[in-house]
Length: 66
Figure 1 (tube, rainbow, N blue to C red):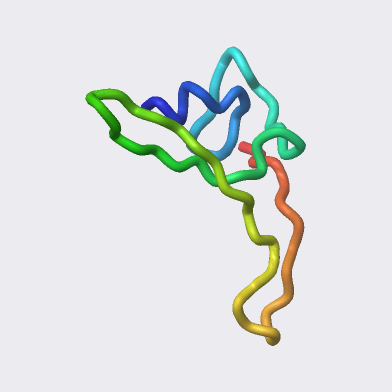
Figure 2: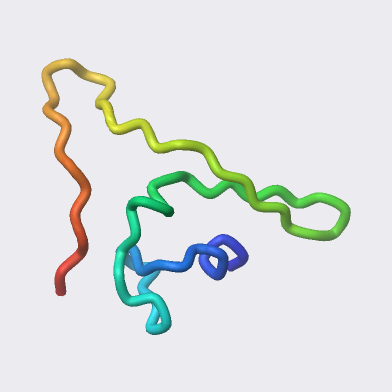
């Protein structure tokens, strides 16, 4: 809940009416949540855009269209 609220964009199932567009420039990162001293602390790490298998091609992310 905390990470979804912090992400100011729409992405897949996490669509927001107040932020209707996907924003890869700011939000192409993994959100990490930690429970510390009765509070949630958020941190982030980069997304690796390569595959683990050389036989599998990578493909760029794209917006969900319904």
